[in-house]
Length: 116
Image (cartoon, rainbow, N blue to C red; front, side):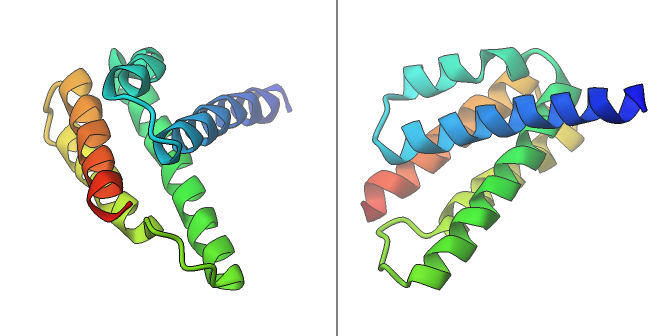
């Protein structure tokens, strides 16, 4: 039972971080602010993967929500999913964790600026 509760707290921590990250990204936060937000996951590959799991769930939830509302959002969640997937592939290939996460931030900001 304790393992389940501990896992739930970990999931909640990364889900909260993913929520804040997405909110700030969509609000147009600067690269450095977004990168600083991700510092806790940049030094640990396992933490980065857990964050990416939570981020992908958040992007999926955003996609479902937008599809339900059909509100014509400027940034499609699919555009944000690709950089998250690329970051995961980079981590799995052994690329530096900090580099992979910062590159993801730049790619996501580029999508937002290009389409928003």
